[in-house]
Image (cartoon, rainbow, N blue to C red; front, side, top):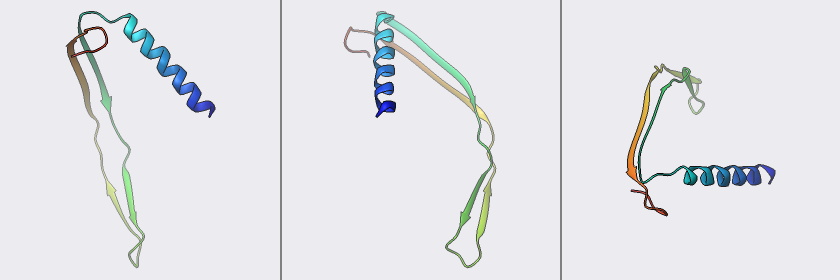
Length: 75
């Protein structure tokens, strides 16, 4: 229950601050790097446990947004 209340308070504060800084037109961007460790999958339904390894590589992550703020709605 405490975690739920803390999350609701955090979301309400974040939402209020983002609306206070809203402008009529806006451009937003985010960039980063994503990576994962090697993934081991074990099939226990077979007579002998079979493990498959998936090798993963890092990559670029990016998000961009362009829009207009109309008060209570954005496009």
